[in-house]
Image 1 (cartoon, rainbow over the protein chains, first blue to last red):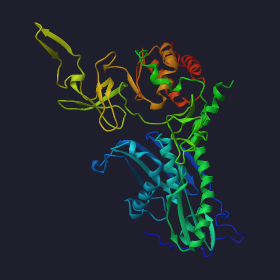
Image 2: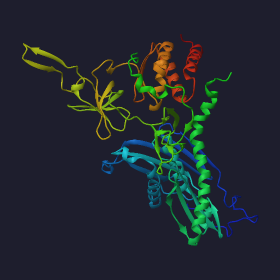
Image 3: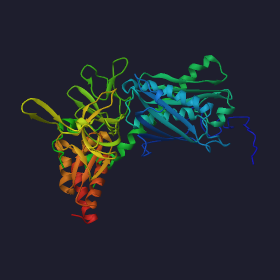
Image 4: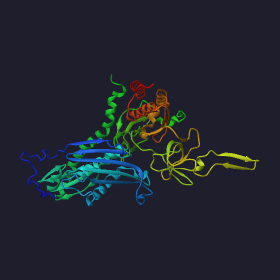
Length: 255
Length: 258
């Protein structure tokens, strides 16, 4: 039995008081919660809640490459497996990896590769498994952000973290961090990622229509948002150890 | 048991109490003063060569004019001379394959499992007496071994000939995070001596993150394992050795063991 519900989008994506449908301002991010080291059996792991998105990332490596023909004699390889759970979206998603998932896996790989020293680990692979438990727009950005954290948690040498966010245009206004409904009903969508060691763009995709002159505004807005998320990433990485340090009050056991 | 002979030079990382307990993460700027400081372990210069940045999540440590980052997480990279606990996973007539908690399996050749004894037969030929078959050990055996050779490309090679090396047929092997091994040993072996004295267990700590231990009974072994897990969790805090002795004494009273 299939339930037929048409995809209906609201006509206006702004409320009467000028805020977005979920009550955010134009440049406001959805609430983000980041945690590292939550999976015991992975070498490194991280968990992210970004609005309604819920994503796990697990990292293994360096380890042997399977299938063996993928191994490169002069450098290691990074493999990313982005998968969505069947229950992550409204209509059941078929569990086999589709075209979209393979593409997102590939772009995340390309996005993360510049920060790693793969040439130091010839013949091996680093594997990142990203599982989207619940999806509500912007999962590729969220996945990149959480995958970088998981890599850092695994103790793999990195030049810096990678942060990602989407900017877009809805109802003629430029907004930051599009939710699922804004992504579908809006005019333009521009996910971008940054590597912080050289502050270069590591991922830039575009969908929709907008004026080319607006691109600078888009990127400027994105960078402000990225800085905000980067701070959260740093805090998430450190808090795991700082809480233990503080418990012992700098070495002195509290009486 | 026989851990005192482990080179204390290997475990310099946590030796000095002077270094700051600053927690740094990958990409964090350690200093912009590149005239007085040089990038040490776990750090690099950025592309413009005006900043030193961290590569790992760890603790910042300054020795002389080098800035180092002691990692808190990481994997084991085999180096020649390391003592490691190996598990035999496969064997064929010419070699054993061992899991040493590194990216590659290690190889143990039969010629490295027998002590070579030379016999002079009437001063003529020097004869090597050593078995060349892989019958000495079987799959699933736990060995304490030493690495003879290791590099980035080839599989590391092991030997079981040497003091304290060889098969262990009893005891328990546990595994902890590799970067925290120096903390289990402590400054010039202080922590391991404390653990040995208080729990009356034999311990052998190896660089690949595995620890072999054997105590009088299961209660003592359990206590020791709990203590090691506590050290692993709190490796980046100050005054750990004092806290550990307190912890073990308290736990002994709680569990009713001497």
